[in-house]
Length: 453
Image (cartoon, rainbow, N blue to C red; front, side, top):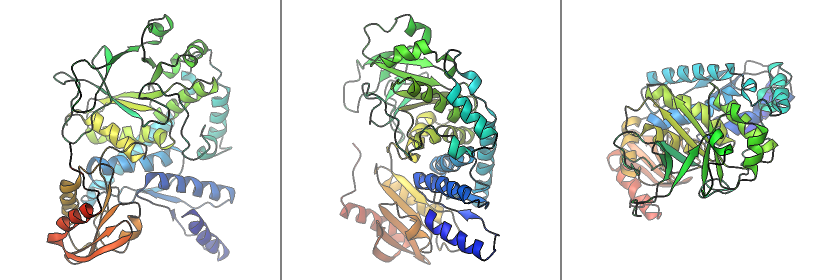
């Protein structure tokens, strides 16, 4: 993608044509982020000054569409990449603009925060300060100077502590509210790995196992931990902010194989704050797992999900972090915080817990109601954990832009749908009224139909 764009840019330069905007999009957020980072780097090195347009193609609708868009676009905007954006939702077009505006406003708030002054007094700030000075002075763009992790998507190495850290998928934590049990499953939302009951973190056991006496572990303050309150525990969660990090604390943590940091965000810029937190640990050779935590005061669900995705997807896209624990006052919908956390991890391609739907926005080429079609496909297939299913309005972009999907439902004419397995066309021009059932049959033939429970 990058090589193709550069080839055409060089042709434009040779012909002295400069009215160009560059756009590298994908429904796969990792590809979208890395392609635009690479493009920005090449353009910087070759003194090309063309604006970049950002978007996540076929982001989908509802929670998925908003979180995936905020994750991909927000990550790049925060790094200083991108001059125009498009939020593509499988919804009425007028619903896209408010989401885009909320995302832009949130990223602007992220950029205002200075985390350097928040670091513990006895911690060496030199590396972080040099980076910030270079970036703010314009000596290097953010995507050159800003990352402590230069290798694309190489995971930060942490020790395995129970079911947290190492090569294991990041965990999700939840704060119980009144009336909830220890394992509040339901509504298609995955169950959190640990729940906080106000005193301890309780491990959720898989469905069917005895929940009467689940394992639980303390959540300690820095003062309690340094005072030795963790004696006799097999697993210890330590709540700490960036300002809590001291040489004494990190030194003790580095030799404690039971310890999991719960890094609490206290600034308006979690991406920079949490990268600083982890960088301080790594500088002192402390490989304890780190779970990121933030409490939001937003009451609007859309605001909450856009902000949380823009805040934490950049970390998990770069594979920094071993868990996520977010809470909000936006609890109008049951278990929205858990659902949001899992969606952020899935959009970052680091933990899959549900079916992923790739669907395009409506346009003049679509010969059926794309919103109704997407809803119908989701109703019948949303239990197929781990599958990627694309619902595309037409064949112009469909087969190419759904390249990452396992199955495709693609408009091929008025009231007609073609079905794909991967990139292979399997059934052509199926009547729309039969298409969902035919898709189900195709998935079953492929051995990918799995019944819940």
